[in-house]
Image 1 (cartoon, rainbow, N blue to C red):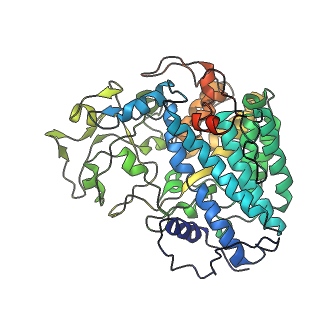
Image 2 (image 1 turned 120 degrees about the vertical axis):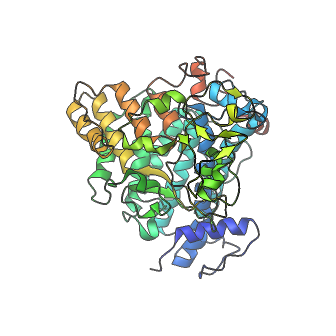
Image 3 (image 1 turned 180 degrees about the horizontal axis):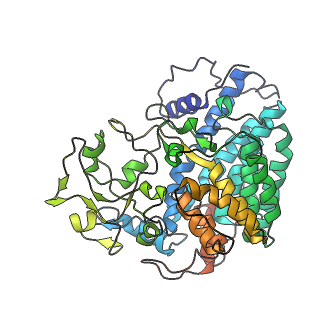
Length: 493
């Protein structure tokens, strides 16, 4: 079968959305889908179907880098006149958001889920190939899962039609997502890499099910730890993945070669933009450090206490940038009359203009920063699921079931790679498990789920007082409630 290059396909889809032509895709373009159930049987037809749909998955990074600001690992402080944005970032971080005041954020997240679901439903009616149908159902389940996780009681959309769809309970959506994944699973491909890189296959479905079961007690009130182990065993025992000896190779410019990646969304500085974390986190003057085409925006940093949770000997601590900044020629950078020195300590959420407000906060270089890049977007693929997370999920499930020995064995695989001392059954507590997940998975956008599952999301942290338990789910967007009278607002809003 002709190989489908997903990175090219989604790049072309993104360019077509802006009216540009894609010249490096040889397959025929289909403008109109037939109404008969015959489409999707050839490689070219499959390419025409899945390219735009996976382009929607590519926006996962853009959605969740904002959602992550509601956790204790990421902060976007106000720096003089920059990043005030009407208090938006402060409300997210302090959990003081409102369904009307912050409707734009919530409606964007909701629309991302359901616009993609609708697009998939439109295509499913034309597909007869069992493998492709299973792949699309799995992709649709992914978006339903995100909607349920973020908003709780949401809509199950498994077909087209209807102007005011019914609202389902979180438990009902959980059951729907589980059923969709289990039914699709036998027809999914077990191939990884190549044409299935960045696509839904059996390992991706196993990860989705493991995530579903990991948080089952939050979603339904009933834990499913044994099922977490079953699904992560499928991945770890498949022989298809292995821990990358170099932790940071998982996030390099060419990270598609990592044997640890289970599901990533491909990016390209020229074909499929959107991977711009360096612009969000670096100081304006870091343009000189990396010879960038434009000045970064000096926004995102990590919370002081989160930075301090890393031991100095932990290899993973190198994901943070602190200290004096240098230009590409090795000269120390000076801006606004002061040396550009990043300090982990952030003194207040709202800081003054000038160096006192521009420099505080450790910045992120977990994803390799592309040097000599004329574009704001980089070539790194964003990692949604990887083996390191699967191992930690299995370890947590075993720990909660009382199997401390198995949990320690798993966690120490990652501790060894990080050059950190091994845990013992006595030292690996649930609190340590949460902390280790934070150190391993920082800024990979699992933190909100983890904090909620461990009962820590509503606690007080730097610049944030304790928030109500109702803040563990976001409000149904006001725009959606106006449009659909069947939608009822979540408690507490």
